[in-house]
Length: 122
Length: 122
Image (cartoon, rainbow over all chains, first blue to last red; front, side, top):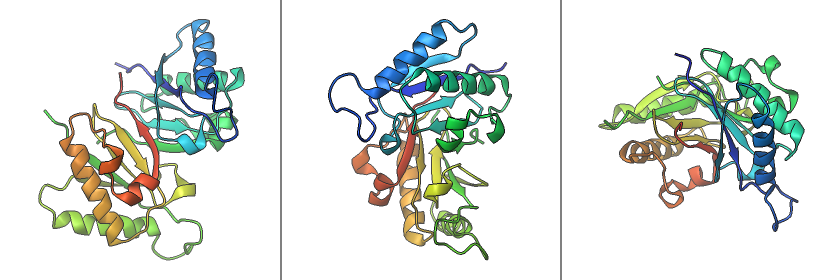
């Protein structure tokens, strides 16, 4: 069975230059992802996490599923375009048996923003 | 059962300023890790991978095990000290039920070099 892809969004990210007070940019990105996922049939599971330890490259998000490649993305804007990029990448990850998304198939902002990729456990 | 921790080392990493020819720094780091693991009782599983997509921050390595936190580290020197740091962190990861290594318990170079941390899949 193809395991469910999980899209993790760090909701505490405050990128360099972003306000230290008020709603964190990460929370805004998570809200944008949730709003878009709610109107997207078959959208992946979305989870807010407190920290992906990519603080220097926020906003950050990740894709994972048991037995598949994992990805961590950074330098994301907290906007609807990023939300759409993340959900598109999550849909590709979900569809691919090993979750390895070819570079060309990643939305452009996610190519630039790929911080790490992990193979499935041996 | 506590799953086996896997220590992944990118063997193709050539950090900025490193020679483009000859043995890659990543391969040197992998060799150092393997040599040390061979003389370390109970050392974790070590695997060379072709790319962790952390190319701008090489040398790079990662820790993972099914159901545990995963870590990606970068800015590593290709030497015996890094190999010792990675094996020490891997041993902590192996010992911890959820694999979440407190910041204070990470070797200092790995604190600075933490590129990302992923929680276990939901």
